[in-house]
Length: 218
Image (cartoon, rainbow, N blue to C red; front, top):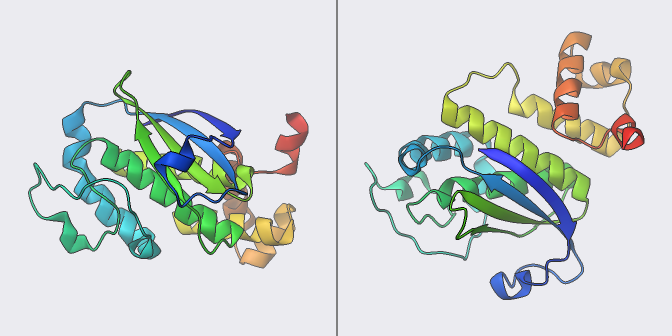
């Protein structure tokens, strides 16, 4: 998958598409392209879902009200995994799961009790999707989406990452709560070696986490 662009806005059309979006919240629109043929995503989705639920078990408690539960072309019934998200048996399932991963990461970092999202597909090009994310802090939502896309892509491609999702979320939480950016202080707070702390801070930067020097550069 490729994250094409992210835009902030109110997106009035969401009122008709998902009534769970609150009137006073901010939103971002994340445009994502899938880069493989349909069978690639259909066949790999069960494993992606299983591994996602292992890393983010709280996704089982998400509520999803859009779409139809159709389980076509599956080797086994995905319902046994206990996933609450709507599954339609198409490429959009993968992007929809990215939406839920993004929502979960954002809620953990920004300490949100709830937030809503929506995944829509384009008629043309067929491999393009828009993911709408309700948020309090668009910068945190943007980071959450970049991390969700990276994580999902690595799982789909079978890449053994040299980073751990729990670590990147832990350091992001610490920075969000304390507004602390010192390498020495963060390493001490997390009880990590400085090398590990630096590696994770570099990844935060690559994923557009709101770091002060990135704001200055912009």
